Length: 165
Image (tube, rainbow, N blue to C red; front, side, top):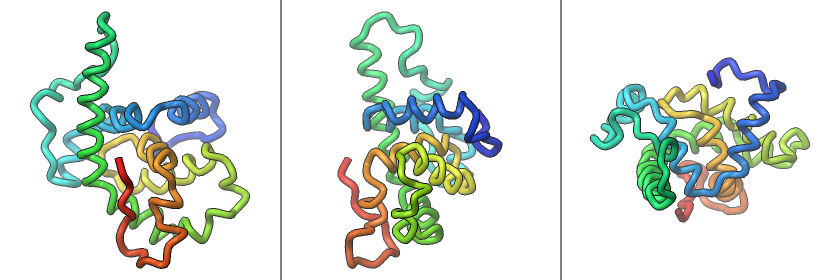
């Protein structure tokens, strides 16, 4: 799906968001790694994908052994956490500082997780870092957007909150 042209009223878009809302934290980290466009990500961050990712590593399809699927998801989730560490500050600056999420969090337009994911996805898509923005937005919602943006603290808004993984 091209998130630059997403129709938020489209049934397929709603299904994608619902699927992301039902993923565990580990599944979201794995999906972040799996959805990464490595060429664009390298240009944006300088990070070079591990050799085992090429060609694109299939984290679950075609595997008959459930333990192999589990190992694949765990491995991709670890890579997703590395990606997350590299992009957290950019996302924080875009969502928390420039968009000023903490000032908007009580807005009734953002009263559901899906509505927040849509809004945050719209912001992240502009960063053009090389991964699926809806996955990153879903991960932020799963980790806690208020905590990520430090909405309940007196700390400076210039750095992202340390979110335990």
